[in-house]
Length: 203
Length: 124
Image (cartoon, rainbow over all chains, first blue to last red; front, side):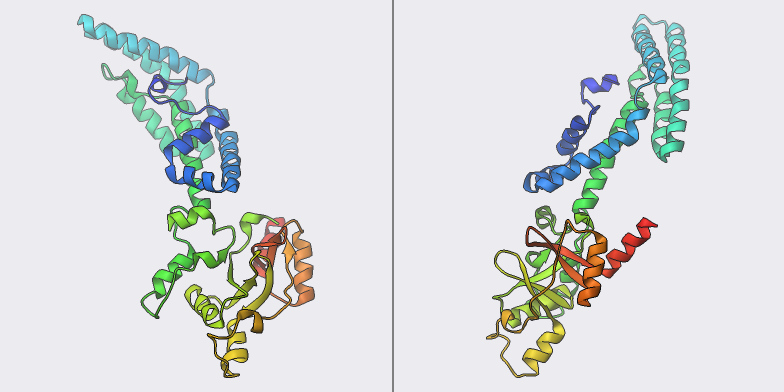
């Protein structure tokens, strides 16, 4: 578990977990891999690639410091109940300081992977979490990266299966259907990597 | 060869009529069809020019003529486990710019010179 939010919705830490999360989030991909064993193999390969790319950014010293800061932050949030606002904000300030290494590391992560929005999100959430009672707003860089892995795999699988794009023969059909008589969708006459069982569903 | 990088092959069955084949050509806006048998093995090739020269110009009835009667046959194909180099040599030998790709005899796609050029570019 890398974030308190994992108690509600756990993000994947292993390749298998990543595959399962992708299948849970995308019914279209789930349907495709159930129909086509080759798509299942590709899902495994793409999940592996994504893991290889991002796993090295998960965890580390900055996350441990951040987690300690969050513990102080949650305590400070609870301390608000005593009415000691100054004391609570003092605790939250310690939390804020503890987040600096992680926010700095998020910039390094963004520079290496090109995911600048992830870094901005992480920094923004860190700032919001300084508000009394809002420590939970900061989900931490690792959880953001775990979500990035899921999005990455879903995007690549959608692209590979053509789930969000119209197949060329479908585009041709749409273009000429009113031009000639008795024009039919010829998906059954297409054999190739871009004509998989899942495509028939997508179309 | 990488399966995912093959081209889609547009097919018709050898028992289809020429009229049906010409409609498939029209509906997919392609110039040739790979003709397959019921086991999905490539058995011939049929182009729009073949239909013109062998059916229309010969005043045959496209509804009554089977694709198997006018297709060009036999057809050379290459197994997906072959190398790109072998595919290149075979295409040069046969004198064609594209070739059906099979796996255990069954058609799974097509490869053409463009694909081979792209592969050469990747190897540089």
